[in-house]
Structure formats: structure tokens, C-alpha cells
Length: 272
Image (tube, rainbow, N blue to C red; front, side, top):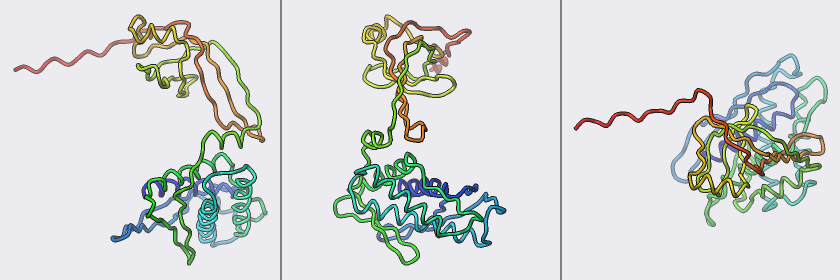
């Protein structure tokens, strides 16, 4: 239930992108009833630029749109087990845009469909939440006389969804310094680094260096950085926006020690 609420909150945040005004939807938990798990939630809207709105009842109208938008998404999910095509996803986005247009709360008819990468993220969150349901379990969303069922067979294949959105892929290689945030001592997963002020994850594919590291012939201490040959691959959508970026370390050139770094001392043993 908590994951469904988080998924709905994320969906609401992306649905209101249909309006070119600042709207902050907050989903509040009002009640949890006994018996079959029933949760009562409500939307609260804040932070709107009122001069951009036409109707004084904008909160009621945008709130109604959020309810209709969630039903539209759940009804779309109910008819399938996965995202089968980009066209199907675009049809859902346009359906949401038409619902926003139907509110007529703006002075000018300027409404936008939710960006497809964000829509996929929300679909994935809802699919992941309902995956916990058993074969005999059901979940429904009820509001304003309408009931929509959650489809616990629906899931999002991340790689396939990414392929649907990718229009162009750009790769480049460069020699960079990556500050180590979290090393991988098993050699089977990603290392966490800080690069240009941002956290990234990358797998080291330099097998010879990894063997030296795992046998402790090379030390990487807190605050150290690796000088590496880094391959960056970025997937872009049709609008040129960035969808996803992947990092691979092809070669480790050396370890740069942290300047002025200090090692924490162990606390003294308690006296018996």
C-alpha cells in the first residue's frame, strides 16, 4: 500500500506538468480501515500562480483532473501486461493531455502531455507495487463513482522501455579522475563514484587491475580517486532530451591519494 501511495504521488507530480503553472500536488493519508485493507487519501494543491488561471475553482478542477488521470492510467494498464509500443504510450500521454484541456482552467489553451520517460517511471512504480499481490489478491482505486482495478500482471521491462524512447545514442571516451565513494570488493557489481559533483555508478572492466585490488596489492583508501579511461554512453530521445546515461571504466591508470586525508582512529577498548 505504501508503494502504491508513492507511485500515485509520483504520477500526480507528472500529471500536473500538463499545466504551464506551478502546481504542487500532495497526497495525504486520511484513514486506514480494518478488514480488507482500505486506505483513504486526498489531494491537496498548493503553490499555484493564480493570475494564470481562468476559473476561481481551479483547485477543484485540477483535483478532478488528477483523479481522472489516475483512472486513465489504471485503465490503460488493465488492458495489457507490458508496454508493447511507443505508439501505445503516446496515446496514453495524449489522453492525459485531453483530460487537462477539458478542465479549461487556463486563459490560453496551452496544455502538454506528460514526458514519456516520466510516464514510464510512474508506470514502473505502480507495476512494482502491485507485483506483491498474490494470485487471489485484488486492488482497486475508487473515486467519484468510478472504480479502476490494478493489474498485478503488468510490469515494465526497463531495457525495452529505454529502446522505445531512444532516438540516438552518443558514446565518448575520456581520461578522468573519479573520487571513490563506495568500492566493490567482490568484483561483480558497480562502484559508486563522484564525477563533476554528481554521483555515478560504473563497473570496472579492467580485469588485471581488479585482481591486484582484490588481492590487496593495490589499496584504495577513503577519499582516494581513480584516474581512469571512462566510456560514457548517453541515450537521447526524439526531442534531444537525455533518457539515460551509462558509465564503463575500461582501464584504471592509477590511484590518486587524497591530499591531507586522515584515517579515523579506533576508539579505545573498554576497561574491564
